[in-house]
Amino acid sequence: ALDTRGERTLLARSFHTTDSIMTRLADPRLFRERAHVGGKWCSARSGAVVEVTNPATGALIGTVPDMGAAETRDAVAAAVSAFPAWRATLPRERGRVLRRWAELMLEHREDLAIVMTIEQGKPLAESRGEIDYAASFVEWFAEEGQRANVEGVTPHLADCAMVLRREPVGVTAAVTPWNFPSAMITRKAAAALAAGCPMVVRPASETPYSALALAELAERAGVPAGVFSVVTGAPEPIVGELCANPTVRALSFTGSTAVGKRLLAAGAATVKRMSMELGGHAPFILFPDVELEKAVAGAMAAKFATTGQDCLAANRIYVHRGIHDRFVTAFTRATAALKIGDGLDPAVELGPLMHARAVDKCREHVEDAVSKGARVTTGGGVDPALGGLFFQPTVLTGVTPDMLIYREETFGPVAPIVAFDDGDDIAALANDSEYGLAAYLFTNDHGRVQRLTRALDYGMVAVNRVKLTGAPVPFGGVKQSGLGREGGRLGLEEFTEVKYLCLNA
Ligand code: NAD
Image (cartoon, rainbow, N blue to C red; front, side, top):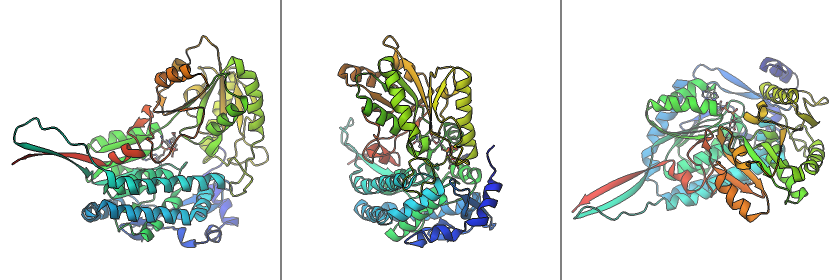
């Protein structure tokens, strides 16, 4: 393994202190080292803390409370207390508070982006983009919460009026990953809060500071105590309590399929609503009728955003023989030109990976593919100059279904290219995966678009472009990529129940 947490921390103490992040912020109060439970900034009952390090430098950023089941129960109890008043607040008023929250996020965009880059590693430009994206959910649900109606019904019984009422599901919880430290929280919390539900958030251990900054801004925006709590600490005790606690009525998770399955099983004991945004293994399908430049730009964006640590990242790039060689040459050149480094440097386009185990996985995928006949056209290992968690952007050609990378999510900057021919059933190839989150199709043939968008077994399909997500549209996958949808109308429905009233006069 590349390094241990201990070594990283030791390194850190020698030259970075907590103050270094605070001095970079226009508003240092956005850097919070305590959890936010029931409207109070709290330490763990035991006083224990967990350390948070910067993946670019290995430096210690600071600590957050190592809370457990007891503090989680406190947060849930605070949410239970806050629920009656929050659900009774008029949707217009809840919308006003949420809008203020979004405005504050945008006002403090630069500080939030700096916090994100320091704890997550992504280039500052990507962090700024994520803050805009995160705020867009809050802004959108502020409005949509005011339109949470249900259709009427035609009575099937005489002398009865039938009414359907949409009601908040109750206390909710979110468990979120480190790759999108803000947006994965607001995509859940904005919908829950707009629906009238309080939410307890357990952010990833690696990126608690983005979550705590959101809590600070929520408080300033007027979100009442207990409506939005952030509990920090090791995952099992907190998430275990959230799954087991019968008063948590809905839990929304974003993370790996393996952990999602465990949570689904744990949540079954209390039959709670479970939304799962899990892994992906996106196919990127390229036909020769597409302009080369556009194809390369699309593949670059689909592969290397967030250093490949994205559930939407292309992990099988299927290229038709008619364009294959030209594409490989141009894509390799563009990949080799990417500037890798500390995301705080404005010229940097690709940051570090999150952990040593992520580096190990990239290396394993490359070595396995090469041992089975693939060729590395650029990159291939840890950057020789930067070392640490900086894996070079890498292109593999000649990738075949027997290779690990063809089956498993790499979650890193390795682009596997698979050649295909006219006779191949490209939809069947692309569907040959346990995942079904996003697929990308590049072709200008209208008939092919019609045919393949139907045949592709994916929750989201982008044609001739890559960026497809946004607040008004549903995000989610099929097969082992998840259950439920976030964003849009459907995202709001995840946090509501329909009550049917049969009224006899
Ligand atoms: P992960 O599953 O390891 O962690 C996700 C969250 O679960 C984190 O908060 C983590 O601390 C927590 N967790 C980890 N182990 C746990 C356990 N045993 N019990 C309870 N909680 C636990 O995933 P990750 O490495 O943080 O994120 C990468 C994964 O997330 C990838 O598979 C990626 O595809 C997926 N992802 C999916 C989406 C989506 O919307 N579909 C978005 C981003 C990431």
